[in-house]
Image 1 (spheres, helix red, strand yellow):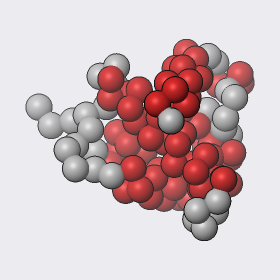
Image 2 (image 1 turned 90 degrees about the vertical axis):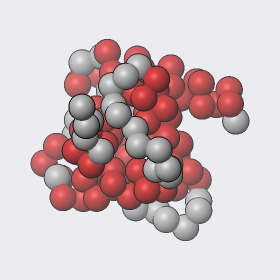
Image 3 (image 1 turned 30 degrees about the vertical axis):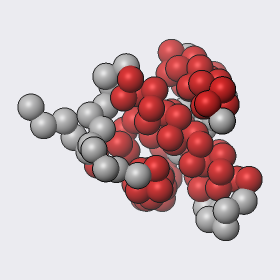
Image 4 (image 1 turned 135 degrees about the vertical axis):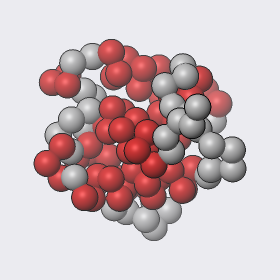
Length: 109
């Protein structure tokens, strides 16, 4: 599992530095994965993508993660963000995850 997460982080990092037109996974893809909450492959892909993005972004200092936040909680935040903003779901999923997380868990200086 650790290798899979590392690979996912590498893919996400590459996605962050690519242009919007070249995203491997869009918000539309992620939204469709996250709509399936029955512990299926798609739900696992949703949670894995979001947790991988969270871990990578936190490690790079791009977000201010809060202690005690669970993967499911972050998944719910991202899914809600994608639900209420259909007009931007064509954008890269990694950047949308970062936007949702930043809005929900802003840094406190």
